[in-house]
Length: 113
Length: 115
Image (cartoon, rainbow over all chains, first blue to last red; front, side):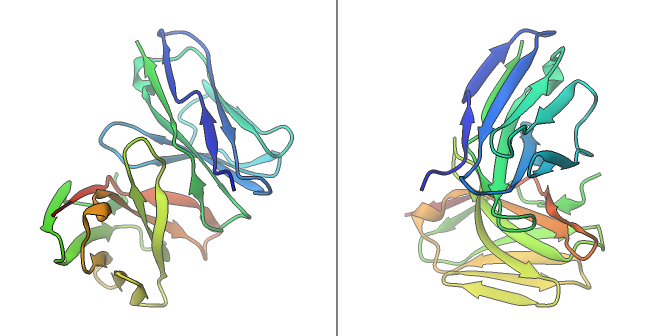
């Protein structure tokens, strides 16, 4: 079956702009996760959804970052007033249920110029 | 503050030999450990895991060893194959504390298996 997909695969934006990154989880997976991988680092947890609700957003770096999952499937990570330090690969993962194996998408590479 | 550390950025081994990738952790609340493998332009894929109640878990060519007292785990790949060349991430979570969904990753080790 189809895996986790993320769009766009690459996004270049200017400092100060707003961006949206989309994640389509595996069908039927109730849990969805966002991670950020900066250059030379491992993935870093941002936020976790169980169904439509954000169960843990403790990893979001500041209030410029926000994520939604209105229908319990597709999720969008939104970044306002982007900064050069936001440049990273943003990874989405989903799992059948909380705590199950997480399946990762290929990521969106965000570059802020 | 790195709670999961992979101190070797890279490792090169000959095909057919053993690859040993190491990982240390500092957070004593971690009780579940995973290894992920990542190819370029792809997301990480789950490889093998181990609970803190065990000291060894084996799956085919892959074995993970856990030394809780030393807060150290290692991944052994025997025999190594060129297709194993990838970045390997060690990850940990606090299952009994209710954070089984939150993975804390190390920086990764690039394994190169030479034919």
